[in-house]
Length: 197
Image 1 (tube, helix red, strand yellow):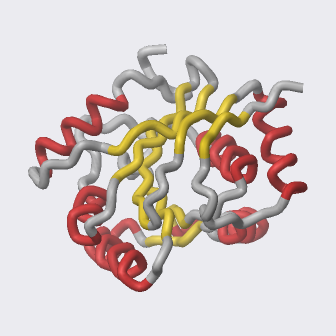
Image 2 (cartoon, rainbow, N blue to C red):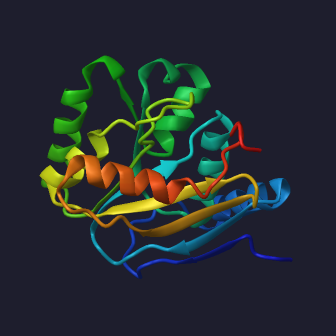
C-alpha cells in the first residue's frame, strides 16, 4: 500500500499523536487521493503559512495531513468555529480561536507565544479569508519580523491533490516587497475554488 506521506521531520520534532492516529490521517489522505510531501527544517521555532485557502475542505484535508505527520502545531481560526464537536476537534488538533476584529492584538499574542516557548510551530492562513483577495493580510510578516522566526510556506494544490511543505520565504524586512514575493510563490498552486480551474 502506497504511503501518502513523504516528509522529512527533525528527530526532535514535537509530536501530538501516536501510531494509530498517524495511520488514521494517512488513511484519510489515501482515501481522498492526496499526498503530503516536503521537509520540515530543524529550527525549533517556525511560523508556517498555508495557502491558497478557498474552501472549508482545506481544514479537513489539512487536519488529515497533520494527523498523518503527527507533529504538534498551533493554528488560528475564527472564534465562531469553536463550538460543539467541531470546536473540540479544532482544539484537540492545536486550534486557537481569534477575533478577526482585533488583528493587531493577534500579532502581539502570537509573538508572545514564540517568546515564551522554547519550541513552537505556529500556522497561519495569510489570506485571512476563503474569498479571493488581491492583497493578503500582512500580520504573518509582522509576526515573523517581531519574533525573528522564519516563514515556512505550505501549499494546498488541488490540481495535483498535494500538500507541499515547501521552502522558507526569503524575507528582506520590506513588508510590501516580502508580501509580493510570498504571493508570487503561491500563484503556482490552485485552490479548490480557484477561478483558474
